Image (cartoon, rainbow, N blue to C red):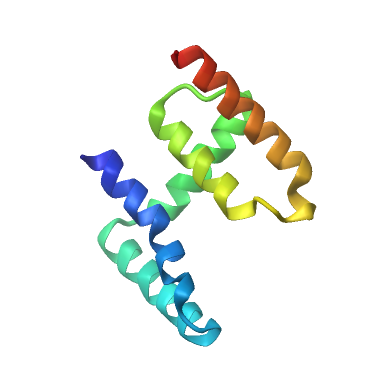
Length: 100
C-alpha cells in the first residue's frame, strides 16, 4: 500500500500537466510544500535513492525500480540526458530480466 501511495506522489505532477504553465508551476509548488509538510524529506529520500542505485548501477528492489522509472519519465525525450537515460534503461532492463 505504501509503495502505491509513494508512486501516486511521484506521478501527481504529471496529472497537473494539463494546467496552463503559470497555474501548473503554482500547483506543483503547493503540492511539493504539502508533501514535504506531511512527509518530511520525501523528495530528498527519492533523490538519495536514485543516487545510491545509479552509483552501484543496479536496481535491488521494486521501490528502487519505481524511483528509477520515475526519473526516466522525467527526463525521457530530453537530449541533454542521453547518457543518464542509457544507464537507467540498462538498469531497468537488467532488473526486469532478473525478476522473470
